Image (cartoon, rainbow, N blue to C red; front, side):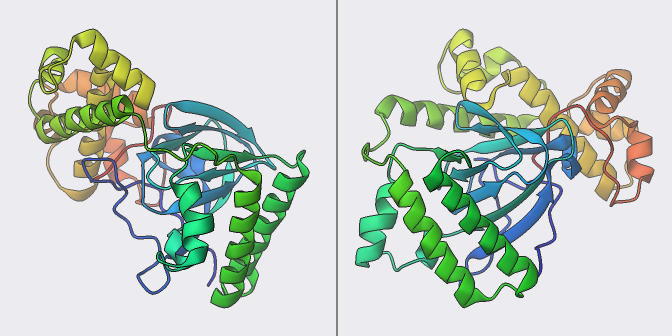
Length: 312
């Protein structure tokens, strides 16, 4: 198994859950060798998955937004992202990140002692992520083990039994170096806020071709506009209207790639009444006009200063 060909777009459903499978039922594991810079908008956009994820920064420096926190990580560091935690990676340059994504059940059956004693406590802990630095001896061993796993994928055809052996070693080290004393369900307020955010996102995803105001979004969850702004800024670090405009641009980009509709028709169909405004915003996001974007080879990624899009 060579390095899995990297995707350059994140595909999610309306809840931001990633829909591309990582591995298969028989072997729920996937290795990726990716450059964040090559993704749409130089960003691996907001998404979550049931799998856990381990990332090593091999080259460059990137921002890792995990839940409501932001971490700036440079070459030689790594990060563990827990199951079902929403996350996003941003880059201002080429950032090479070999990474693995796998279901914890690959390590042990869910009704086994190993799973219940060593895996479940990590999954159920309050820790959304864990940063690894070579300056800490225990974390340095984690980084070395992670590099060994990558090497197996790149040089040993991804030998499954060797990979599984190293994954168990990696998890043992994670368990020993992670604070998992707070093993408790999420506070009810956090659960309610997440549910409210999902309702508002689903409303935007369903109605983006129509005229939508902040009042309309707030009405879906019966909150004040200030409360809605706080939820968006804390959880996905943008305003509801900016999210709406970016989502419309992402949908327009997909239509430009997959249909022959005119630019004006695509602008109208994605909620832009003014074609000139649409073209300006599109070029700001993609550093290319809609026409240039359409003509470009599918393998070409423009230099973009916006954020990576969710393409459904």
